[in-house]
Image (cartoon, rainbow, N blue to C red; front, top):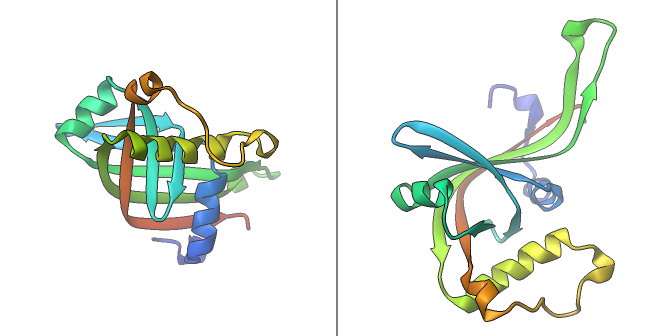
Length: 158
C-alpha cells in the first residue's frame, strides 16, 4: 500500500468493516475484459457468501475463472474545503482477493442464506434460530463461497 499511514492492520477492524458494509463489489475477469458487480453478501471466518440467480454473466465468468477481487466500504462522506484541490473523502474500506466456489449442498446453502439474512434483517425481526426456506427457494439460487486469500484495509479521515 502506497500510503502506509492509511493502512488498517487491525484484523478486528477489517472484520467490523465487512460486517457493517451493505454492498460488496465483486470484480471478475473474462478473457482479459474486466467485469464488476455489486452484490449482497455475508461474511464469516475469512469467507464471503454471495447470493445469486442461477444464470447470468458473473456465473458464466466464474465457471471459467474462479479468481476474484472484492471491495467494501463504510462510513463514506465527502469532505469539503475552501480550495477544490483540498476536497477528499472520509471512508473505511477493505479490498481482498480469493477463489469462488459454488455451494451445492442444500444444508450449506441454507446456512449461507441464514448468514446473509441475519446481516440485512433488522435485529428486532430476527428469529431466534434460523430462517425458513422452501426447497424450491433453496434450489433456485446459487450461493458463491469466496475463500479469502488476501485482504487489506484502508482508512481516510479517521
